[in-house]
View 1 (tube, rainbow, N blue to C red):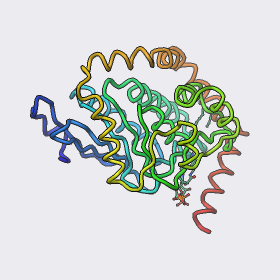
View 2: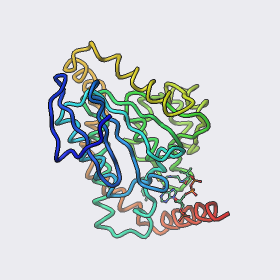
View 3: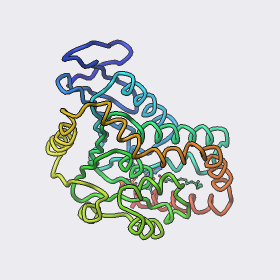
View 4: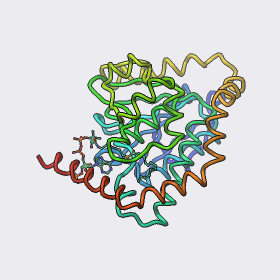
Length: 280
Ligand SMILES: CC/C=C\C/C=C\C/C=C\C/C=C/C(=O)SCCNC(=O)CCNC(=O)[C@H](O)C(C)(C)COP(=O)(O)OP(=O)(O)OC[C@H]1O[C@@H](n2cnc3c(N)ncnc32)[C@H](O)[C@@H]1OP(=O)(O)O
């Protein structure tokens, strides 16, 4: 595995353009043999998704697409936490201009990940609430560590998961399970997530996780990439088009609803409860 600076390095090997990238909040390592890129989230302490990390994920996905990566493993450098979801500080007492940029960048990131032409696996090596779960659901396959939790818990925070969050889950576990999970804001333990098909495999450790993720990506070795990518595009088309068509309205809703005093109160109380927990 090579960890290099994308802007400095672009080489051809085994007929695949190889590249990798070092940055602050994400890092990318490309396996020279397979052309598979591993994108690590590395924003301590909990990989919460603020504007800056989302910008880096988004630009990395653009680079991977340009460089014709053969597959993506999305994971966390911080074992124990895949991602704590959206950074609540981006929504609590927000600066509205930044809040808009934050949401637009989240939309861009989701569009790129959900529609990427290469196969994608989330190696969920820790908890994955809300926005963390969204990233995992956007991949094509999910491998998860034991003793972790995953789910869209928005209603527990007094907020509402947007339509495209909901569709991302519905497309994986179906309407009935999604309705039940989201109205409760339910977080699923690993084994529960496996039983409803939210994840595909359970692993003991990182080594096994990487091996299982690689095994999934290997399934496409002999499938012509163009045929694969077009098929994925057709299958995901409606979900993506719905989001793109409504993205202005979605942004407006986020700002209008998110700045309401009652929502701010919920978010403030939730933040306090997180902080109390970490001090206990
Ligand atoms: C505004 C809404 C308006 C409109 C609606 C329209 C659209 C919907 C909008 C948004 C959808 C929202 C999506 C989201 O992703 S919201 C975020 C949901 N995330 C969570 O609920 C996770 C909360 N965190 C946890 O459960 C735990 O932290 C976790 C299990 C991830 C890790 O536990 P651990 O014990 O290891 O760490 P902690 O001690 O809890 O945390 C350390 C530190 O980090 C802070 N923290 C945790 N999560 C977040 C977060 N998501 N954002 C910001 N900060 C976070 C935590 O407070 C601790 O801080 P400190 O005490 O200062 O050390």
